[in-house]
Every structure is written in structure tokens, then in C-alpha cells.
Image (cartoon, rainbow, N blue to C red; front, side):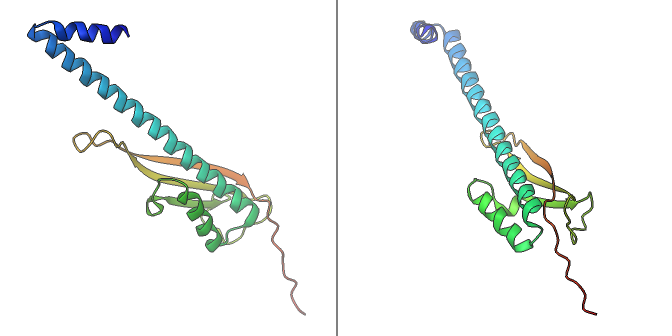
Length: 151
């Protein structure tokens, strides 16, 4: 309330410097609000990507590396967010290798997700672009059934 009273008092003053001070104060307040909203938006996007990485790592550790199931799970997770599925770059490592043909019980599964992000409130004059990169590791609980060979 004190700020509003001070602002009203400044507006009653007929000095030219008072108007300039008021405009600068309002501009700074708006910029602080925009920065606050953008930081909150970045933290929320980071949380969403972190959740997607955790869910994908859990899914792979429990169900294996069936590509159609992975695509379906990723689409389901991304549908609940404002992220674009085409922007998400997901890489899966098994025992620190990109060779994901074999997945046995106890194997280390690492999911890396990289998503581009840009602040929305800064406009075209100050483009701020960054990447959100999350890595989650789980250990496989999937036992591969070996088919016995016929003699």
C-alpha cells in the first residue's frame, strides 16, 4: 500500500522528473515480473523433462527395449505437456553403450533426453535459447528368456 500511496503522490507532482521516474519504475517492475515468470516456466519445463526421463528409464528397466512400446510411452508422456514431440532427442544406453540389442537383468540403462527451450517473454529483441539435458539411470529388472535350441 505504501508503494501505491507514493506512486499517487508522484503523479500529483507536476515536475517532469517525477514522470520519468514513474515510467522507469513501472518498466523495471514489469521486467522483474517477466523474468520471474520465465524462471518459473524454465523450472517447470525442467521438472517435466525430468519426469519424462525417469518414466522412460523405469519403463525400459521393467519392460525392455521394444521400440513401438517406447514410442507409445514417450508420446503418452509428452501429450500431457506443452513440449513438442519432434523437439525431444532421446538416447538410450545399455551398460554405457548405444548397442541396445541385448538387455539382461542387472544391466545399467541410461536415458538421456535433450529438449531445446527458449524464454517466451523476451521477444525477438533478446532471444534466450538453451537446452534442457536430463540423464536418468536405472538397472534392468527384465530377465530375457533364452529359447532352448533343438538338437
